[in-house]
Image 1: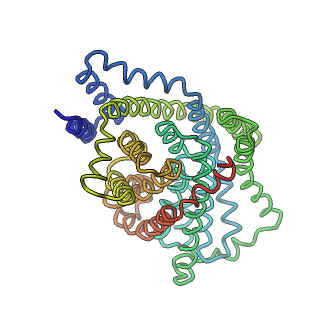
Image 2: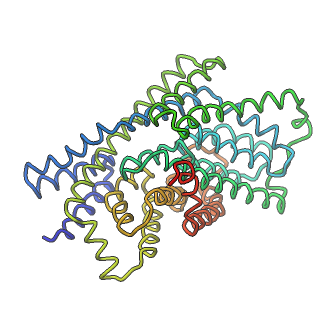
Image 3: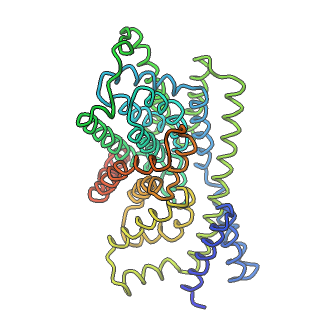
Length: 440
C-alpha cells in the first residue's frame, strides 16, 4: 500500500470514529497510535510517546489553565452584570444602542475569558432578556448575541490561539497580537451594521425610555468604572509581556491573580464562585491537554509517512492548483467541518495536514492562524448544523425558535465573510501589530 493510500485510510478511519460519537482525543490518538504500531512495529509507539514528552516539556503550556481560571473567576463573580449595566446606561439613547452595547460587552468578555462559550452564556442570560423586554427585534438580537460571542476565540487571550500555537509551534504572543486588529475590525463592522439597520428600521432597536435614561452623572461615572476594571486587568497582564518585562507564563499568572483580587475587593469571591471556577478550569484544561496530546501523536505519524509532501505534490503538480486556490479550498473545508465539529476538533483533525502544507506553500503561519480562527467563527454559525446555532437554541427563551436563530445569523455571517476577505487580501491587518511590537 502506498503512503498516500495509508494517509487516506488513517484520515478516513479517524472521521469514521468521530461520526460514531467517540471522543475527539480518543479517536485521533487511537488511530495515530495504531497506525504507528502497524507501520513500524512496537518501535512505532516511540513516535507518539516522543511527541507527548515534547509537549510535557513545553513551558508555555502552563498559560492554558491560568487564562481559563481568570475567565471563570470574572464570569462567575458576575462582573459582567456591571459591564452590561454600563452599556445599558451609556448607549440607551442611541437607536439600536443596547445591541451595540452588547457587542462592546462581548469584546470585553472576550478579553476576560478567551472562550466563545462563556460569551454566549453571558449574552444569552444577561443581555438577551433585557433586549427582548425593551422591544428589540428577536431575530436581530439573537444574531447579535451569536456574532458577538464568536469574538472570544479571536480577541486575546484566546484559548484557541494558544492551542493553535502549541500545534503549529508558533509564538503565542505574536498570535494574540495578530488577532487584535482583526477582532476589533470585526466588532466595528458588527456595530456599523447594527447602527445602519436600526437607522433604516427604527422599530428593530428602539431607544431606551426616558425614565430609564434619567440617570445621574455620578451613577454613570460609577458604572463607567465597572467597565474599566476588566480593561485594567487586561492591561496589567499584557503590557509587561509586550514590553518584555515578563514571560508569557508569568503574565498569565499575573492575570489570574489580578482577577482573583478584583473579585475579592468587590466582595464577590464566595466559596461557590471559587469552587466552580477551579472545577471548570481543571475540566477544560484536562480536555485541551488530551486533545493536544492526541493531535501531536497523530501528526507525528502523519508527517512520518511523508503525507504532507505527497498532498502538496498532488495539488500543485498533478492538479496544477495555485497556492491561493489551495488556501481557499482549505477555508471552505473548515466551513463544512464546522457544521458538526467545534473549533478545537477542527484544528486537531486538520492541523497535521494543513499547517505543514500552508508553510510549504509559502504562507505566514501567524497570518494563517488568524484566518483559521475567523473561518471557524463563520463555520460555527453556518446552517444547518453550526455549533453555535444549537448552543443558542439551548440557552434562548421559548419564543425564539430554531428558524429564528437560522434567520438571525445570515447578515452577520456575511459581515464576517467580508472581514475574512479583508484579512486575506490585506495580510498586514493581522501582521502589522506583531511586526511592530516584535520588530520583525
